[in-house]
Structure formats: C-alpha cells, structure tokens
Length: 205
Image (cartoon, rainbow, N blue to C red; front, side, top):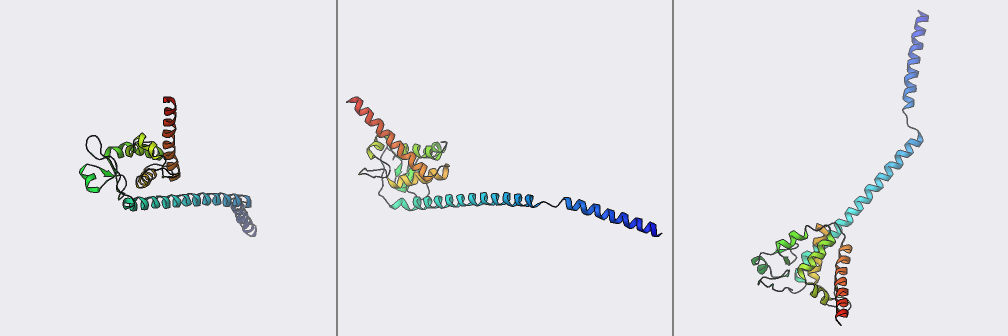
C-alpha cells in the first residue's frame, strides 16, 4: 500500500510538473513584451496624429463657414445681367435671385448661382477644379484679366472677396483640397489668363 501510495503521489507530482512546465512555456519573454509595448505605442501615436489632423480640418471648416455666413453684408452687391435678361451669378438681392430660380452657393452667403452651376461643379474631380470652374461662373476670362489678381493686391482690383470666400468654403467642404491649395489654384488661373493675354497682345503688335 505504501508503495502504491508513493507511486500515485509520484504520478500526481509528475503530472503537476508537466502541467506547470506547459504553463511556463506560454509566458511571453521580456523581448516579446517590449515589442508589444512598442507596437502599441506606435498605434497610439498614429491615432493621435489622425485625431489632431481631424481637429485641424474641423477648425478650418468652421472658420470658412463662419466667414461665408457673415460676409453677406461685407461688400455691396456685384452682379450683371445675362443676354436673356436674367441676372448673372454673383452677390444678388435674395428676392431677385429667388424670382430668377437661383440658389445660394453656401447658406447665408448672399452669393447666388443657378442650380446647374452647382450640379456641374459637383462633378469636378477635386476642390481646386471646383473653384476654378466657379470662377468662370462668376467672371468671364476678360473680367478675370482686368481684375489682375485674386485678392486685390499690388494696386489691382481683385475679385469680390465675398464671392472668393464663398467659392473657397464650397470647394473645401465639397472637395478634398485644403484652403491654401484652392487659393493657389485660383491665383494660377488668373496668372495664366494674364500671361496668355500678354502673349496674344505681343503677337498682334
């Protein structure tokens, strides 16, 4: 009986040791733990970077919305009549715009266009393309050349800032480009038209 008891105890002890050894094998090493910590830290940094970028974009959009909503009274109306007698896109009295079947490019902006203009601009592949298209909705190429530049610097007239701010706000929200990229694209369009006009004038002379 003593021998049997000892044998059973030995088996139990051996079984315990085997199980214990198996458990020891599943415990991660210090290197594995450090690798996990490093990977977790990298993911946290990535998440923080994305959150920061989103916060910046939300702040930028909020600024643009605020600008477009308050600029309606910042400048006098600027609009002309089309050949068919209807007003051209621009800063137009609301009652006249509504009678003409127009709609605001951005809510409370005071800048009106026709529905087809919004529909066509929405088909553009980027925010910069939208902005450049809308410039031609509000101004002819000749008018853009005469205005000289985007914001009226260096003694030039520039475009109506109310219209410019509304175009930028629309393009940022509807497209995927930044405000700075859209402004740059608008400036280069005017510069290209002016350069083309100068070359044309030199050839004619």
